[in-house]
Image (cartoon, rainbow, N blue to C red; front, side, top):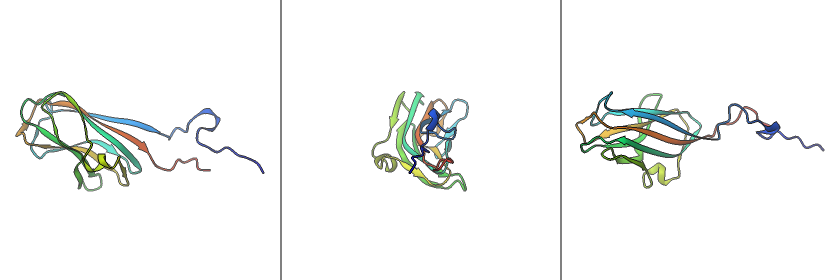
Length: 151
């Protein structure tokens, strides 16, 4: 009986298609692309087979008026909402801060495995006009698709 090592990483190199854990990020800048109450901004494309473990919203320039945003997910296929505030609900854009969810549906569950291509999106609320705020949306993701090098 022989032992054959087909484990990922055999030979000292990881397969090119393996992404263990990554942080995806996308900036937003309402000073160059204004927003309004109810607007949806698709910021990060999450491919099917991806586990999103955590999401953060970093506000680098405060809006200056009462301004909030939800962070949730929308299907790429038809743009329909899955859960508009599944990651963050009423995150303030009024102060320079790093915001992460804890009680929202996906955060409380420890993450979400996406089975269809989806967007992580900001849904704007409260303020009539968003024309100052700048920031970044971050997502900690794990590629859960089957590697092509299967034993």
